[in-house]
Amino acid sequence: MSVPPSSQARPLPLVGVLVFGRAPRLHLLPLRLRALAAEALMQGARLVLLNSDDCNPETGRLEGETWEAGAWVSASVPLPDVVLVVTNPLQERHRRVDRWIRGAVPVIRDTGPDKLVLPALLTATPLARYVIPQDTVDPEAPAERIEAWMAAHGDCVVKAVDGKRGHGIHRLHAGSGAGWCLRKDGAVTAFPDRATAAAAVAARIAGRLRYRRYIVQRYIVSTSPDGRAADLRLHLQRDGHGAWGVTRRYVRLGEAGQAVSNVSRGGYQGPLDGFLATRRARPAAEITAEADAAALGIAAAIEAAQGHTLSELGVDLALDPDDRLWLIETNTRPQTSLHEHDRAVRTIAYALWLVAGSPAATLPPLS
Image (cartoon, rainbow, N blue to C red; front, side, top):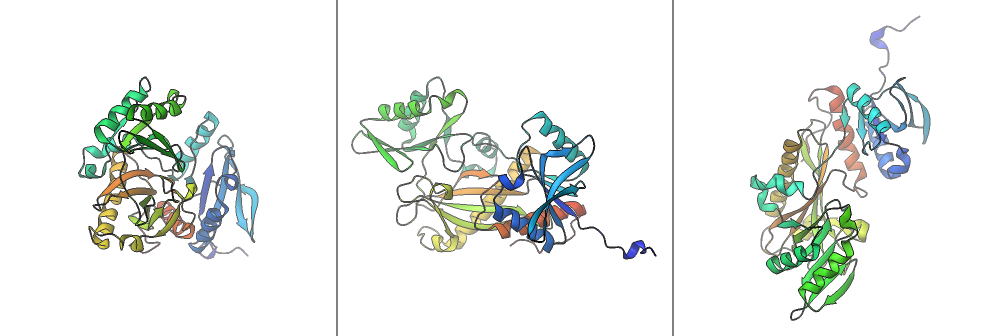
């Protein structure tokens, strides 16, 4: 006897994770995948991992991996109800898959402005006060541009517009007398004058200037009480109501002697409250409230400029000796190795909110 339709078990919604041209388990950390798979089940869904090479727009056939009985199992799967895209479609065969999926189901794919575009779009808004002064490095005369900036603004950093995880950052600061020092990757090199220091940096990046853009930027002193590089990271995500909130806020501390605080460069993470308790110019609660408002405002400004919605954003802020906040950069795919579960809760909740197509609650609003 057939079961009445009203009593048949409805299949769980499928949340896809798509990587172009590579198996997701080779691209994403196991901890992130386990957190997403577990949280999908907790919220009444199933996670499926998709490699674009196993997706056929012509036949509609997909091969994917799902978590079954403690292991990833390969199987033919239907088109997911929502797809989280974590890489960019660089080849035409990838773009065909991308167009097919975008035309069929809701897609989450976060893209953001680079280090040149972001300051420009914020300059015309009240958020302009967080923009660190900077200029592009002229590929035809890099030494001259860097030296001119040093003369006008003093200590500075030179870095690639598309740089990631603190790599390739050159910090220039005044030394004794007319001398200048270059700090990079924990090493310090002294130069007799400004022109020689600028020429040394220009020589180091000369080859890359043929295919990459660089900026020279005012150096903001943002350090811990013991002198290590420090900054504030706010990880924003949309929740199960589609609303922005702060998933985690924390301080990043650099290794002694390093000019950057990135964990991938030997840095550390710690509770923000303890770090802000050491500040003297402003109360911790005041700094936190402003940091939250600034980060959320920056996310809204990026969305308005790009014309599409983001699902998450990492916002890095420097805090100078006067406790003034400055925007270092934003990252649409922030590292979350120490809070993967918290991230997964919001990622899955937002994905299911998109599936529902309405503001039906799946989680309480973020604090």
